[in-house]
Length: 388
Image (cartoon, rainbow, N blue to C red):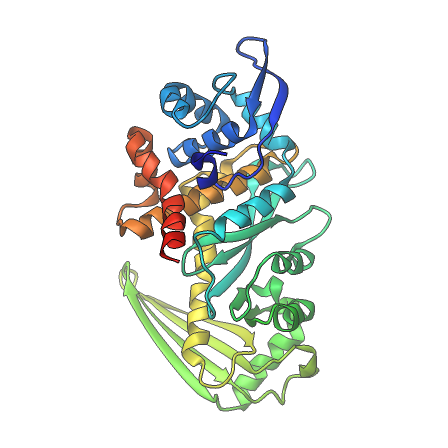
């Protein structure tokens, strides 16, 4: 592919034979690389549906012809839909990970947050169910490192180990909500992936949860770490109490390298309403003594994956996505993560302060801005290679 294709991480090129264009009724040939590049570029430029992608490409055909062959012209919205529906999501995921590793480096101590997200527009209660994606987010960057579809016949518990197998996270800290607090998951993180964990504990591990709370009543914490945040009319104090005494935990050896229990008490005061709420949350971790600040940072930063999902819903309208044919919803979700990665990478590189929504609008109005966003990742890669 040309540099334009590389910049969006597309390594597979093929011809789509005899794709009928509903606008003309003629059978046409489109290049897969062209279709993917247009979809991602239009996604950066604030297009969220197949119709919007087609309309944007038609209005900016001269721009796209600078980089693409377009032997059959601009594909129709139906063509985009069919292509994303039939593409193998496993192959596309491998290519996404090959691309993301070129400009996002996972450092030792990085926090990898795992969480699931349901695309509610891609299903109904009356059919086979909603599309549900499990993602691993590099918290410091707010960028997805990989994702898998949670099959309707299974759940996140069985998919988390598969997602971990796809990632090189040696020396990192894995965070997850209560669904990820499983003995098999902990074993894979520590023994196979050579990483650490900070996992939420709730009533799905009822005995463990009760034993952590019992420990908090009967044992003095080995360390306490406190944070205070103020903003948006609220003042929040978080107290992290870390317990190294595991004598109240039955079967402690089943939790690989378990080193500490954590109870976080959050007190939130609303200045306007003059009300206060208190919440307690429990965690387990294998991080050693002297890591209180690291544990607090990992727990606090888990919200980044939830923030990424919020952005996908609010800025990209993913929750309203009604792409229900075959693999369309899963592959479209992956494409939106490519778009999000490009936007956040460019924002970090340029030190920009504009919101992602404003960046998308600017890219839609000005193709020079669109070019900067699309190619900044490739330029960073080439610069790094030259410096080496």
